[in-house]
Length: 68
Image (tube, rainbow, N blue to C red; front, side):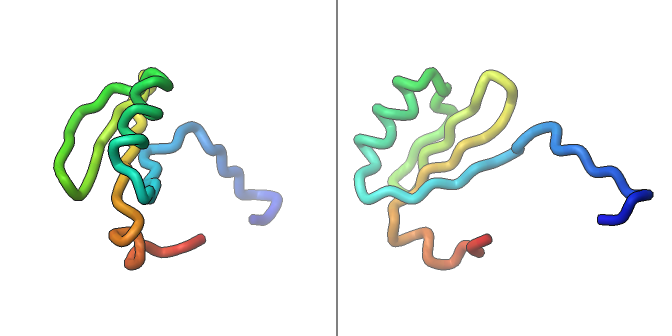
């Protein structure tokens, strides 16, 4: 980034978590106040109050995702 370029982070659109225990993850994310919007055996989708999406997947489904 140079002096003439300004970038501002305003929000996170999506976060993906991997877990070995989907049932426990469902309880924890629900306890945090996130709304469960979709659920199947391969993914739980939650929404935050600000519109961000949180995906929770079994740990073995995380292998193909890029790591930054």
